[in-house]
Length: 131
View 1 (cartoon, rainbow, N blue to C red):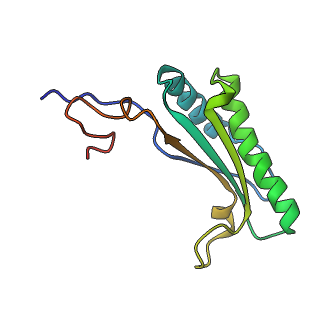
View 2: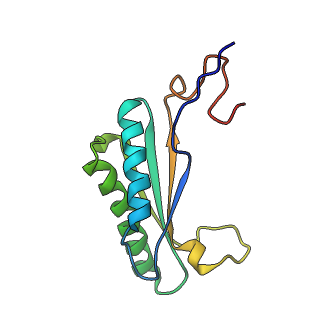
View 3: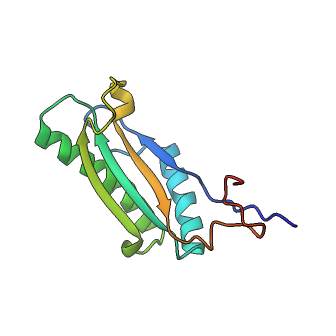
């Protein structure tokens, strides 16, 4: 059986500086690459979960996490992805398991792909991870 490799950028996590929603240029390039792939695979949706560290109040962290997710989403939209295929969520601070984690790790936006099962399987029935 011939195996077809999909060149899909896998799960992305974008990192941010404290108090910032500015997307780094390297992350911008990764998002643009993802958008190109997504345009070619119209059944696939993207979810973006913005997060913040524990510094600051609950409301300000919720707003910051939304700005981070929105910034990533705007790059995908500017690259041609339809708005209906982008879900942006603000999770605020924490949102992690109960174990303490590094504050820099918490300052992020997580992107995940869903749907399009026919798009993410190869001819042998394996997903993009070879399962």
